[in-house]
Image (cartoon, rainbow, N blue to C red; front, side, top):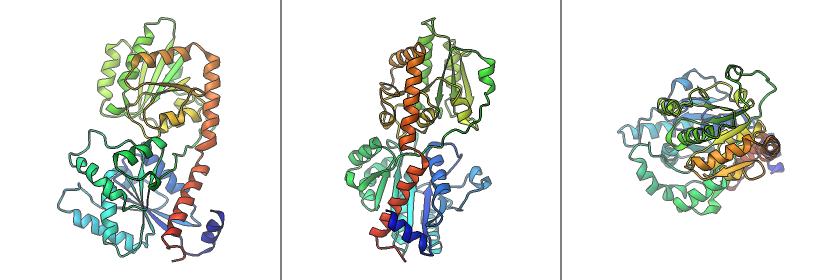
Length: 391
């Protein structure tokens, strides 16, 4: 690793990486946040990044980015202007002298692959996989993807999963040899020393605060959290409040559900907030009860604030949470979740010990310095094995 890094720093021409993603609507969604951090932190002595989005968004137009950005005017895989989109990608790859093309999300895998087929450049192709497959709310043609991915995956130089769970999923469901899949975990930025307390905590007093950061969509199962809190309230001996950070299409339904359970005085829907850490550092237990997960940024944020975590056994959650720093419960089980919350609400010392363990664990493996070193080494080894160094 090191000698190669040194040699690259000394040579004049940077290695150019194009990151291709379907779109970026906001900087705080999981994958988008990770990608923007990688672009920001890439060692500019060796690499030069560039962002290509299939589709434009208001966020993209108005945001200052630390690299060039392009959009391809994509409208869907089966639209008649697909040749134009792929040709535009090919032109960018050629004109910008791109060495590595890395894709995020499903549509980008296909457009990236097609673009690489018609460019005369020898490219390193990297596919970034960050979750357990396609959700149910995707276009119908995504069913075709499942048939095509085993074939496409072999055309990529490597696939990078963010957890062992995602690696296992891609390997088995897409018939891809596991040696073709690398693991580089998500990175995390730690909270600063801001000690301000958001108004919600000043307005409502409680012995214990539970919190969940999640997009309000079906897979996150916020309904299970509400059911567990409703069961907990019946215990009578736990004085709790809860916050939910995040927005999405289920917001109205979930608020109505909370109200119908008599929880509206205790559960506070904060929507999308600018500074998640301002809220997370003021809660006592972080919760995530999703049915499917890659490697959860929400759990990592709880851990960075030194919190015990209650999470479902979905995907990469069990790689972040074990008996030392939290409680794992089965997905879709409000009773098990309620028991875990009850146990932690009654035991200050257990919460403190688990919280300390959370912080230690996240600091050991997920600092951005450690994660970026893995990305830098991966890129250099791929460039070297393809014989593109020094070109």
